[in-house]
Length: 210
Image (cartoon, one colour):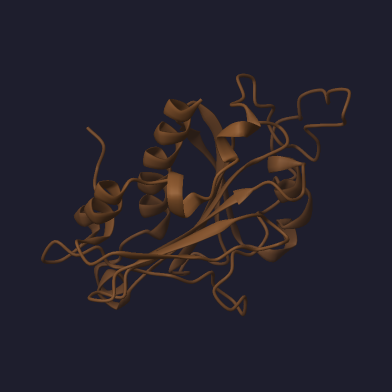
């Protein structure tokens, strides 16, 4: 059974707050590169993807699933309320260097997360692997999310922000940045756990759209 973000909460309110760590002013930092000790990368296709150690997406979703805006299609209203509470609000937070984005937040708790459709680079996970290795201390290749390869990273072990990236194809994917709030910090909650919970919902919705 899929866990709700409310399991990271006290009194039924998710303990999250938007942010991306460092000095990024609330926008996701680039995804980390693959560690030098990772397994050898799969052979690149005719378009040069994947590269830089990124895994290939063997059963991609069509790019048309990202044709809308995440505020309208990534999560249903009921799902957003289940994740963040009944007072949840959403607003567009598009980023030219990544793609269209949506910030969901709860004015009652300060809880929030930012999701971007990663469509601008046309290199998917490969762009993240190539450019961010030197910017973070913690990088993990995690279990697939909805059957798609995924990574998560934090700037340090004690960072309260985690960015999780899912490759829906070699050329595009999803970027979600989530930061736990004060109570979550006190409880020792892991922001990466929350990121995976949200993205499981999002990927299921996009698969249904396909």
